Image 1 (cartoon, rainbow, N blue to C red):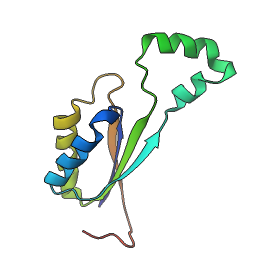
Image 2: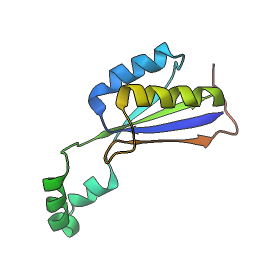
Image 3: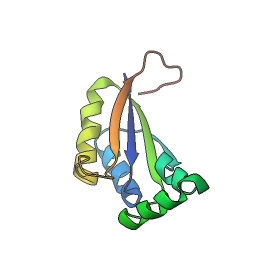
Amino acid sequence: MKLVIYVMTQTKILEEFLSELNANGVKGATIISATGMARTLAKSDDMHMFGSLKYLFENQRQESNVILMALPDEKVKTVYKVIDTVCGNLQGPDSGIAFTVPIEDTVGFKL
């Protein structure tokens, strides 16, 4: 069993992404709104000058969605395929990240 963690930077396509997961047999996920460390530090006085320059050159995305999915190992590739289809390639800058961590024990997990 794996925990798939996907940091989605394109928050406008969340519903489309979740619908496609559902259509591909992934029935559960937890979505958390998040703000990255660099964006938070850019707001502080210590980083104000660098943060201001950074905002000139980057998009103005304020939040991301962190999507957590506890899945059987065989569903991980399905999730990666849906990410690629709906959200696009994650190789470019500011495109998000997806990764897995092993789950050893669960209580209350239902397939």
